[in-house]
Image 1 (cartoon, rainbow, N blue to C red):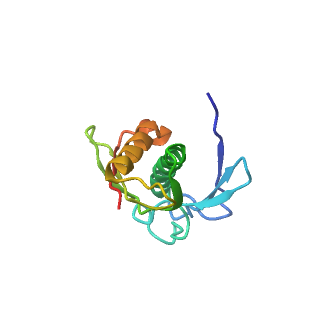
Image 2 (cartoon, one colour; image 1 turned 90 degrees about the horizontal axis):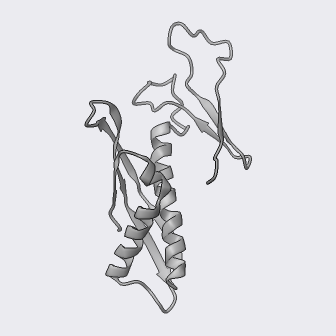
Image 3 (cartoon, rainbow, N blue to C red; image 1 turned 45 degrees about the vertical axis):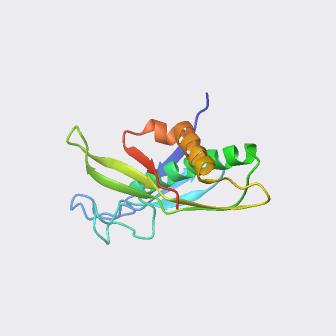
Length: 153
């Protein structure tokens, strides 16, 4: 199989720590050189300790599920002879208590809108089959406990 590495870096930077009012902002560094600013969600830790402009772990999980689904969808659509011009997903994750009583992302809803071109375009059944196949193959959806629902727009 394969290994995937991310480096997460945080530094106190001289801030007091014991008062619990330190910044939660940090950096995610990836092997290709990308750096993403991360922080706690403002709903978990209020401003100014959270950076609202940064990506929080909950958003990152939702984006990872959406991205994984999209990548499989594009691959399967291409193999089926469809030309995808645009794919947009307004994905939503919901935080709540799971069956163990633990706070977790309990549900992820993907709402992909796909624009096709060319002579061959999928009908509703073929589109549903592509999404189903992509969902079944998505590594990230297969890795989480939350229910993942796909509602094509």
